Amino acid sequence: MTTRPIPVVTGNLQRNRGRKVAVIGSGSWGTTFAKVLADAGCDTTIWARRHEVAQEIQVARRNSQYLPGVNLPRTLHATADLAEALKGKSLVFLAVPSQTLRQNLLDLEPYLDRRTVLVSLVKGVERTTTMRMSEVIVDTLDLEPNRVAAVSGPNIALEIAKEQPTGGVAACADAAVAQEIATACSAPYFRGYVSTDVIGTELGGVLKNLIALAIGIVDGVGYGENTKAAIITRGLAEMTEFAVASGADPTSLSGLSGLGDLIATCQSPLSRNNTAGRLIGQGYTQEETREQMSQVAEGITSVPSVLELARERGISMPIVEQVQMVLDRRMPPKDLGPHLATENDVPQPELSLAGEQPSRLRRFWDRLTGE
Ligand SMILES: NC(=O)C1=CN([C@@H]2O[C@H](COP(=O)(O)OP(=O)(O)OC[C@H]3O[C@@H](n4cnc5c(N)ncnc54)[C@H](O)[C@@H]3O)[C@@H](O)[C@H]2O)C=CC1
Ligand SMILES: O=C(CO)COP(=O)(O)O
Image (cartoon, rainbow, N blue to C red):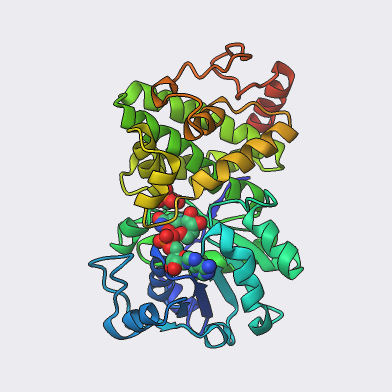
């Protein structure tokens, strides 16, 4: 699946005129994405759980807790009233923690128009069900696939809020809906790409968080660039194998929402997953790390769910396994490294996916190269 950029960004203000959209959640990503949508010309409303946050965005044009120093667009409307936020909106973007999404959906259900498309911006899986966020949306609200979408990519919130250019993939089973979402979020500093691979796009965002935890851990230990490069490279192989076994198109994992996001998150000190990993690598416990983090680090919650799914699918994920062992204090952080062998592992050929059998590997490469 190749992702296509929407052709013209500059005409978007015109295209988005009158397009009514909402963002649910006013943390760092919700607020940033609302700014992107408003700057792309959409008539944008952001919903905040706390009245004082909505007030600050609406009146002072700031969200000082999550985006210090960033001025928000005058056109952005903020409210703490869900009914007001959702009224007449064609696209509703969800930017809440993965573990609260199901309850948030139940709260907003009474106010949803039956044509509204729900777009997940969330990069986690539900702990109790191991579902991806689009699956949680379908499961909770019983929507058709063409009303459920995801946007994901190398999107460190604070950088985008400062208008540093990047892009993201808008994925929906219905290509026309994906195109509409990509248009809605294409601002001068953010470009929307189109994909119909919802599984691959979502899983890229979930899985890179786990590899970023590993990077943070070895950073905390004090290891250098060789170790990190090996983890990123082998991590991408693990991500790809897991995603393909889950029904994703492998090329999505080498695109913006896979490799792109993996690089951004593993390199950036602003990444919360990377930061959480670093604290763990420095010897803090999981609980102490959670206490120190004032923002969501989805990876910590996703690790057990991803490993559970990997076991069901017969996939070996040595890096993610080792992250879990470090989190559980069954392995010292210094032992997480590029050798990455668990007791039963046999070293794999350099090009192999994690734990890949040669025949499956052949099929993967044939598919990738179109042979
Ligand atoms: N921050 C970033 O750079 C990016 C984050 N994401 C994803 O976006 C999602 C949201 O993350 P952030 O905005 O960064 O987190 P954050 O920690 O900055 O903000 C979380 C927001 O959720 C709210 N919240 C907490 N409990 C809630 C509940 N029960 N109901 C409704 N809202 C609740 C908080 O008040 C806060 O506004 C995560 O899945 C994250 O992985 C995706 C791309 C970039
Ligand atoms: O998803 C992100 C960047 O694309 C943000 O990563 P963190 O949640 O680790 O900050």
